[in-house]
Image 1 (cartoon, one colour):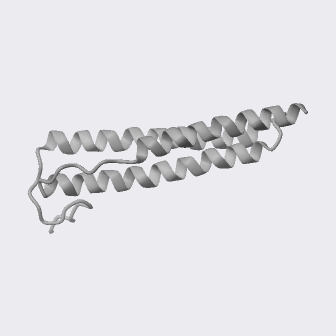
Image 2 (cartoon, rainbow, N blue to C red):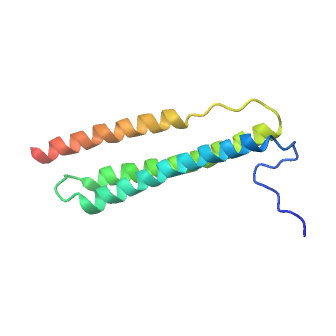
Image 3 (tube, rainbow, N blue to C red):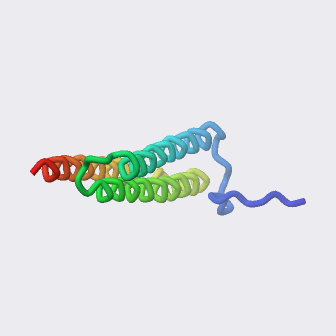
Length: 118
């Protein structure tokens, strides 16, 4: 039975397995971050009773979770392809997206908290 081709296998050479495993660990770390954001979003919607427009905060967190998961997979794949083709690893916007996204969630959360007290 022939082996199934890997998602990053485009016919290039196989990189040192340590780099492949490091790439996978990074992907799993971003996936854990995405899962934590999803849990926070669902928690905000389901558990915050007194927060004005808690759904807005929850949906922002859930949206950031989806973006993080999708971009993490794309980053893993492009890194894998670059390693197999012996090209430099591409830069990633994921840290910037996550930093701006969490800052936005913080600002929206603070506004909603203040709006609920008015």
